[in-house]
Image 1 (cartoon, rainbow, N blue to C red):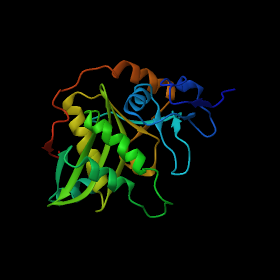
Image 2 (cartoon, rainbow, N blue to C red):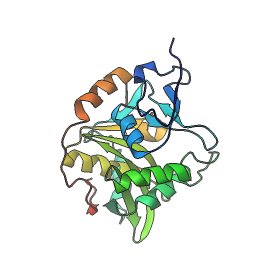
Image 3 (spheres, rainbow, N blue to C red):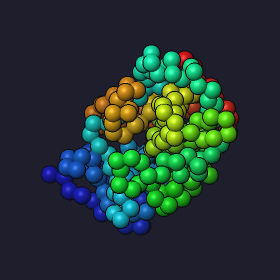
Image 4 (cartoon, rainbow, N blue to C red):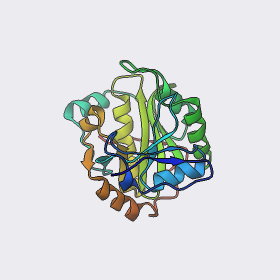
Length: 236
């Protein structure tokens, strides 16, 4: 029977993800901190933080795991038709802080947000190191949607997305996976399937299979210009 591990500030390592609890699904460890080295070590090993504002830091590796393969995303005809009518533009790494703030904003039917000031500061530190990245959706000069995540070799670990206009976050996911495919990425880690991701064709795979893929891809090379600040385009 697996037991929960407690981390201290001097302990940078994590227990094997296979030791995560089944209830709640994937909870692996408690404690530690959100310093860049620990966060990168977590993602490198298939682990991510998720906790509510008043909770200690909780680390997860759920089973099953939600993933996309860049280039295999499901796009409905109605969504294609809708997006073709929009005069939206898309950028990489133009407004990382604003994207995180958008993801942190209160949402309907949700009590608060887990993306605290502490989380935003931690991921901005990774962004400054060139490890965390954002994709923005614009209507003119207005930011209407976006997402952010961490790049680990040929894997992009998606963290959160938001929209202020219908379907803007879906557009962000479509543009992201197209961009990642062109740049040599092989996998998108979407963590846990939800109805929004399911509508785009997210797949659930066993944690063991995910970890094998991660081990194979996490040191792989991609286009070195993948995350240069730039405008990107949607292909419909």
